[in-house]
Image 1: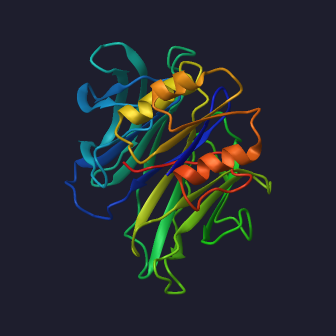
Image 2: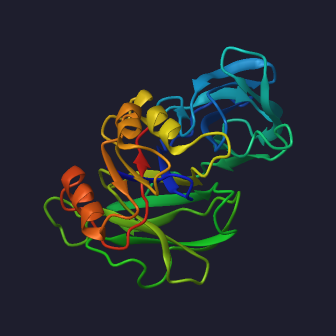
Image 3: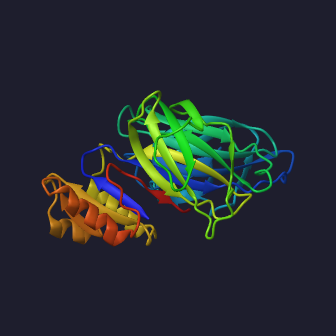
Length: 309
């Protein structure tokens, strides 16, 4: 996987979570999984109505392990995030859940401005019975407070030139979740299946913010893509690199691309897989991408990352 990390520059990330299509659950309990997308938030414990439900969840973390869910009370619940192992509140908000329904709950925004008042809590129903036969289904949640307010999302069968054709999802607003979009998984019976490329632009623009290859794995899969970013007032690129490596994303490759704000020694110590300065010729950056992710270097690609929960 390829993660192009720019120090002090907006970087978009795709967090991929798996939906397990099911109708199970008691009538008085909903099912939820939690995504930590608060850009300046440290690891958190999440309480629902005063009961700890998710513990020590780091930025970009998804709990429980996918494709699982955690039972939570139906009705209007108070959801509070506190710094892991403390009572220091990061945010407190309410969400309404229906009994037996399944939800992706995303906390995004910024916690260190306004005493958590700038945290947005999204509760998006996972209302799908699965993808049609031979298809895969995608749904996108826009959780990037620093990105464009509305985005277009292209999901194209590989090999793809992004953007091209008509967006799969148009004018998706911040804090909104899209409907499910079903696409043929392998219409040409290729071996192996080609996978897809996800491309995000500002609404009505043809300039990509990022492009990202994604492989749903099998026909019938249902995937939720959470768009977020890592332009964080409370954390820098070195700290983010260390968090990515510390949280077990061993296949994630990090290129520290900097204008001199960090040294190569600092990058190596944080766990970066490559170090490239902004003054370096473009072929040097492409060579780093090719070395870490053979066959996936693209001129013009800014940043991309798929995290497997």
